[in-house]
Length: 111
Length: 114
Image (tube, rainbow over all chains, first blue to last red):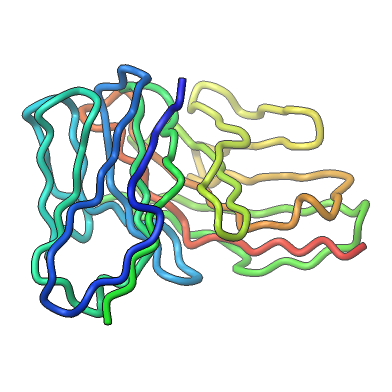
């Protein structure tokens, strides 16, 4: 199993541009999550999903959108990128009762 | 909602000493408490976890204790080694609930001096 994979690894955006961060898991987990981690800080939940077609907001959802059309994929969309969205983004997946497994992260810089 | 506080924010120990990191949580319904280790530039990785029906769990040099009454849990690392240097995060969730969302502490930077 590859576990949780994310693309791209790094990205630089200009203010106002949009992009989609990809996340895929091959563990057949129903639950998937997106976090952001600012330098020297903990992880903040952006959005989560408990199954295909079901998504909900986390602690810091503003400026982001998600969709979940399949069990495997949970893309995160940034519309109108702002410098405040400069961060490392982690995707994670889990069963309802077990720990979360994290992807390798995407380092995003907005200039 | 749930709030998790973690202390200390930085911890420096000599190789071979013990290290203790403490977390408190606010929601008495939380029942699952994992600890993650994050090395520089890497993803968080689970090192140990505990559920609310257990008071202590040990895995070689790492142990976690849980006090449900006081709503706090702690990570204990014995015989520390330089490779233990990393940021450690505690978290809490209502595992098995509707979402299994993790609320993270702010992290502890552990430095083990050779």
